[in-house]
Structures are given as structure tokens and as C-alpha cells.
Image (cartoon, rainbow, N blue to C red; front, side, top):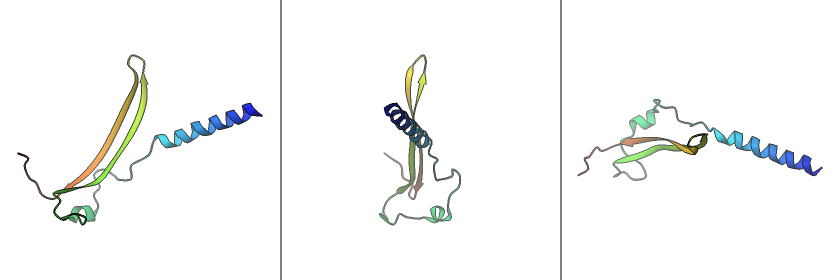
Length: 88
């Protein structure tokens, strides 16, 4: 009975991690909503020169035989700029 429970637990852990691996982003790239396009300021801080609309990342691991384990981080950010100013 104990080997069966161990196998069942192992199978559940593997399947749970498989479902968590690839999450899709909810925002479609290149598709801006009318609300995002018409924004002229941010409600939370009207004096802000920009606001981050979307910021998500995916962390993944892979194994390369010559280099070992590699960590990859893919980040997607969407920023609405209200006031362009130069940094000095």
C-alpha cells in the first residue's frame, strides 16, 4: 500500500508542476484598448509622467549539456508615457 501512495503522490506533484509551467499572458501584444489609448493621466497620481499598464514575467529552467542548468527570465512590460522629458 505504501508504494502505491508514494507513486500517487509523485504523479500528482509532477502533473501539478506541468500545469504551472506555461502560463499565458492575458494581454495581447499590439492590441491596445480604447481606454489605454485615451488616457492622458493616471488617476492615482495625476502628476506622474508615465504609468506601467502591464508587467509580467516567466521564469524557466533548461539544461544544456555543455553549460549545465540555465535560468531564463522573459519579461513583458507595457508603459504609457504621458510627458516626454529628457534626462540630464
